[in-house]
Length: 287
Image 1 (cartoon, helix red, strand yellow):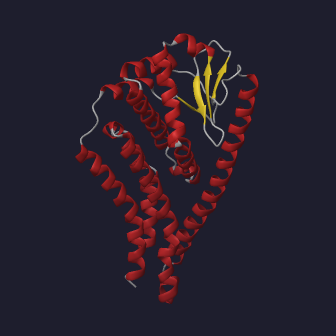
Image 2 (spheres, rainbow, N blue to C red; image 1 turned 90 degrees about the vertical axis):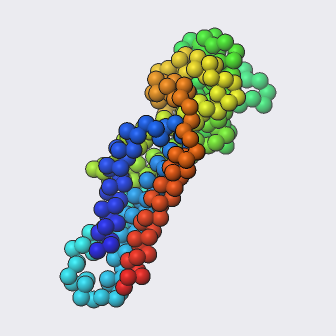
Image 3 (cartoon, rainbow, N blue to C red; image 1 turned 90 degrees about the horizontal axis):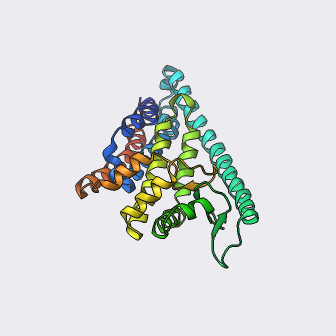
């Protein structure tokens, strides 16, 4: 039964597939394509789970005897689709609302305690000795620096930090991370993949690192990463110091993959999305 196959596909794409992908370090050398692949895996898993009930509908509509023969399977796929839809709606609402509230509160706090900013600037400087830098995305975005990071870095390394945080804000990487957070929470704990969330967070930092390299330079970006290694940031923020500094420094030294590999990654992503949709179409056309 195709509906049961869709449930199996959702489980495979939610649990073993992300664990195998996280080990494929070559993906990281093309972070933009890798993020598309990760999105495709998560969306395909969700589509497969949601499509299970519609795929079983032809049995109910066109074959009354099949309902009696496969009642348990039909009940399972309908339960899976209904549960996933409910979890998706709840996770989307709760995570989105929570992030907006946290960012608004922290932005208001930063605006109160920061040193006097330059007119029209979104940069806020906190009088704190520990090197820290992060950004608060949103309609009223902020880039937050500590006095410690300003004193610890030469001007061009500091420019690399600002370029990194600016890349996060310009590309709205927060929405990408939020999307994955919603899908992560939607999946039942038994098949949830923490590897996927770690890899996505790493990849958005690699993208921002590369924006910094293009704007300022490799050595300045490397110095900025070393200075901020292990620094902390609020939960709702995005920060240059998060993620594996060793991995990011290694990726700065490696050449980008060839175009053929990147094209293959995009093709793989498209195939993943089409697979559950194709199975759903097959369930209806084969009746």
